[in-house]
Image (cartoon, rainbow, N blue to C red; front, side):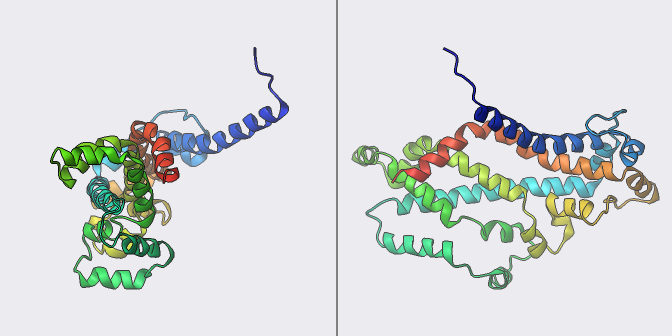
Length: 289
């Protein structure tokens, strides 16, 4: 029997359709401008479909060492930072999930304390400077190696796993590291994939800390460079001669839109592979206790 559609259902569907348009239309506009001819984009003769497809903006961006170097910096920062985040978060969360850990309650109280009170930017900067981490990616990775929210959720997930698994493994002579690597981690892929996605997005979108701690602009990831192009309005990111500068000036908004699209592409490509774990992992780690 077919379900009767009410007026409320129609209103909800229409509202969701409007929300979808708010997301899709700007994204479509970015694609259209990036692939349009400069004369069309400056004149505004189209909105969602360019009259003439042109990839000069992408050719220009991919030919400049500064932009490709920024993309590579973001890849290095994202991969290295995510690995460190997962290692630190998993080991701490698994440790504090065990009731036999000495000082477990004190450790949890200290972790929870950091959710409420923060040291602030100036003490954090002085600490990074005293450790000699300025102008290195370690400054961006180590200051956010983990956080209290991640530890709390992962700890709850690990506590929800059957204790009989640990007991059976210990009876077979397995140590804590082997139990963690061979038994716990394979069962924890939903929660690990969920937080891996969080960490990847955070590192790829790294902006404020990169400006604070990276004095050398050659080490900048893509987001600070994108800000310089879009907000400040500097489309010329090449260090070559007048010919390249004239090309950048002629391309104008096309270069900015192409840069934004390239900066969004990696996250859009990764998300579908982790999306199936996302909702399941977040719920499992947040409601079990």
